[in-house]
Length: 165
Length: 165
DNA sequence: ATAATATGAGATTAATTTATCTTAAAATCA
DNA sequence: TGATTTTAAGATAAATTAATCTCATATTAT
Image 1 (cartoon, protein in one colour):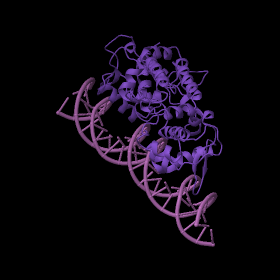
Image 2: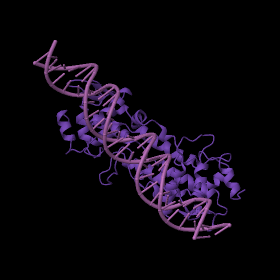
Image 3: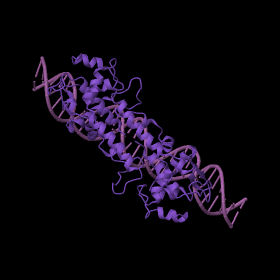
Image 4: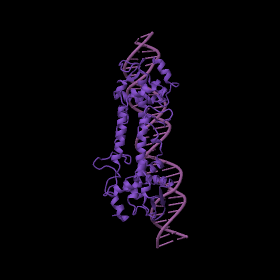
């Protein structure tokens, strides 16, 4: 349903949120793209591209040079999963019926348009309700939200560096 | 959520079902791959590949030579959309959480596993309940189920040839 | 048998998505 | 200012998916 690129974006923002010192601070430390990449097992060059896109979409702020890197542009509680999806994949997947390759015309819908729309709406609503702060919270609790990023691999190091826990 | 290939497969079987003379006849006429392709606006060579796959999966029967072509292997009421999905795409998409690129471990699930699983199960259940007969019925009623295949384009011709209506 | 009609199968090409590489530009710090 | 660090940008490559092409094989009909 979502592209790999989009999942990379989501995981990156959750990780950024989970190593934030305080939930609402605006002046937060920047995290290196290469650190995010290594902790999440995402190709370094690729995560740069994804994050850069999110910078343009105003979800992330970047800073060049020493002490530079990436940080969230808004409070984690104010960024929903669907915000990220919109920025990366767009909404087409949430407007297309299962048996069609293109959007249904509401006036001339496909045979299971009404069923499927319910499903799509539900998915969309869920993604629009979950904030990355909630997921970051689960990461902090030690839950394995980010598939390849565990306490033992990458996360502990990052937390230490940023003085978390 | 489904590959284009899979949607092609679904649309082909719905069209096959909608030009069946009787719902339960076993000895039905074969329809040419090229007719299906043209009516559905699917590349001819490609639909062949898709249908051939469905022949191997026992959902379709093919016959070479004059009077040959493709026909359903079972009654349309006995083929669900999920049967086709299983045959073409497999079930991976219905077992993978939104924020993950790989299957969640039930013992160590991601932060929104339980929500998302509900959604996936619902989608799967729906696809497993809808038979291609139901959708073929809508086609017969003149509804535009098959996105590019309308009465004016392809369908009328096919119906005529097979003595439907 | 032979010719014509269809699918079968495998190789090839094209398009899209994902990943990598290289160089440029900006920021920091000495 | 100059060296270093880090993202920006664009080109290139690899992988995956979708589409095309060619020839083989099976079936029917004459």
